[in-house]
Image 1 (cartoon, rainbow, N blue to C red):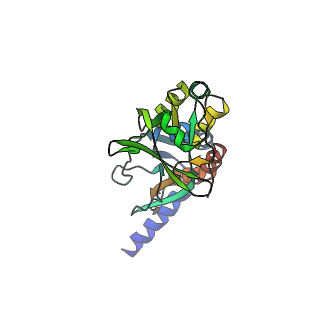
Image 2: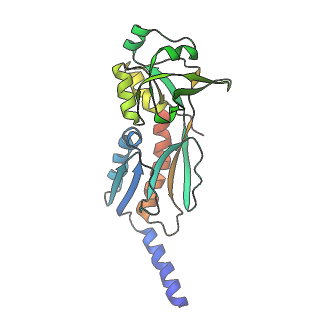
Image 3: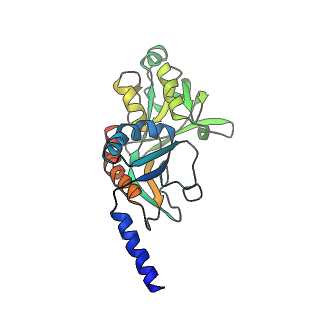
Length: 239
């Protein structure tokens, strides 16, 4: 029995030393896959041609263990604390107020948070409760203010919110990394820059690494190097 255990340990060591190969399954919200993974994954796959990466781009929160995912990217207001999973911090993204230049030219530039209540907005489902829609905003001095809003569009899909804001539907409160490219292209303009919404912590999640395959380990190492850099370039404060 002891000999079998020792042989199993040696086999595991041999497996860890092999060139990374096989499948790696990743769960990731759609907009994060487009904004974060798309620019960097080709570099990994070029240097690891035997690894096949399978990305499930979904806004549904999957159960990594039960659904047999190897990795997941998540953004949440709270630090992840899930039994059996490791959570590696990638950075913090704040939500900023944006609108198209055409919309602002037509309806005016709000000078205070209170003025948002007179403008059309694009909100999340979670922003509406008790028959009202609200945004919780905070300034650079950590002073908070609740603003009642009038959403013309309510949707949790960030890409839909982004496109609606670019089209001129109203003011949106979007994660900065999602909006920054449109801001740079002059499709959106940030308003009330001293005020922002709740911060979201970005994490890479994976099961406790006992006997982790080289393919998974190599991809984790690659993502932990390149994801924070890519996210930072899109306007995120790194912890």
